[in-house]
Structure formats: structure tokens, C-alpha cells
Amino acid sequence: MIARKYLYLIALAREKHFGRAAEACHVSASTLSAAIRDIESELGVTIVERGQQFSGLTPEGEQLLASVRPVVEALQVDILAALSPAEQARFLALAHKALGLD
Image 1 (spheres, rainbow, N blue to C red):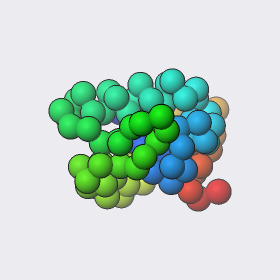
Image 2: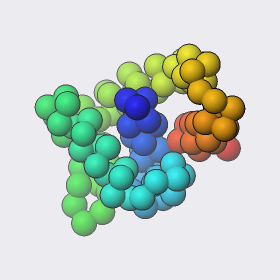
Image 3: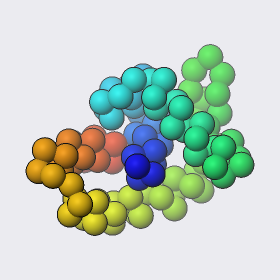
Image 4: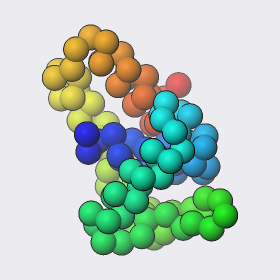
């Protein structure tokens, strides 16, 4: 799901740490990192400064974050309509943590 990748980006920007962002999203750090790399590959730009640890978002990453945050929030309603009750609960928990609403 494309929206999930952007939830991971939002969580990473908030947590400023791959491991904590992954934990908040209930995925492994490698899953979160792979999703971020997928976004970068799809867009053809680097959105995360990487070193031995998370170093922040690039200017392009900051622009992307500002663009996707309101879209992801709006999509939650549409996504929920297509999910089973169990999937809705999991998605809402993930979305709230990723968006910092918990």
C-alpha cells in the first residue's frame, strides 16, 4: 500500500530514528528503510540523509513530507472504508502513531 510508505516517512521524521519509527509503525527497521528507499527510487531523489544513523531529511524530503502529510490524513477515511474491522483497527493504530496522535 502506497500510503503505508508515507506513514513510515511521517513516523521517521517525527521519531528521527529508524528503529523508533519502525517500532511505532509495528514493522522492522529494515522494512521501514526499504520503504523509504522505494520512495526515493520512485521519485529519483534522496529524501533521507543517511550516515551511521538518521541525519535528517533532505530539502526534497522536507518538501515531500509537507506535501504528503495532509494527503495521508485525508486518505485515512477512504482507506478505512475498504478495510475489514480488524484491518481498520490495525491501520488506525499505525496511522495515529505515525502521525503522532497517540
